[in-house]
Length: 316
Image 1 (cartoon, rainbow, N blue to C red):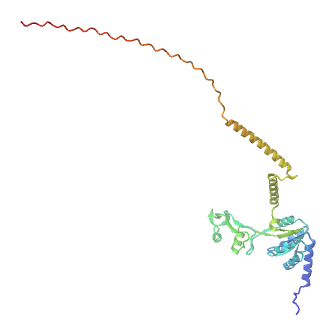
Image 2: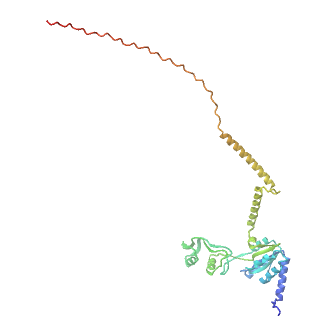
């Protein structure tokens, strides 16, 4: 019994061969997401960037098969396969630097209102403050969406900031209508980069969309941290040997200065000996002669007069 073989049309075979050739012959190839991109804007962007890149629309199954068949021939190309899963993919080919391509695509994006069912690319906040809306039914609409509002001078005023949608949220009809009234256009229309392959490496959207200024700051910070690590670990190399010598000199001077300071502090703490006074010879006072007391003459007792006896009269 013969095995069943799926019939593949000649058109699909031809498309597969052409796709493989494009992937193989170009040094820079990428995946673009065409989701939510109206045809007029797509054609306009393609024409504007035709000198820098080409975008070829094809079936996802053909693109995935072409990538798979080139895995053994082109190192790292398989990294593009998973980028086709959550997108409406189109193939990008170019000879430009991947970061320049991403920057050019970003510059050619336009703003558009959010329609029901679309996914928000970023957080959307209804800010606190006065509005141009007169008092009316809009107060109820705001309340239904959890937005605190009041009336001031006949106009609606938003009392505090309210996060209406977070990045990745789906927009419903009520929120779409409110965003339109506030003239908030959160959707960016353009060619959305998913990833770009170059020399064995696939650069994802999160890497390619880093701003040039932020990229420069990251490089500067990395270089500074590398130099600091090399200096403090005393790793000698021609790039930092001069810094190591300067650091050694600075450390030496600091050590010398601290040593002198310690010596000074130490010398200040030693109590100074007060000069000894030579003992003064005390003049010995000669003992004063106490005046001799002359013996007091005892008072002479005056002789007592003896009482004279009167002569007794003889009885007659």
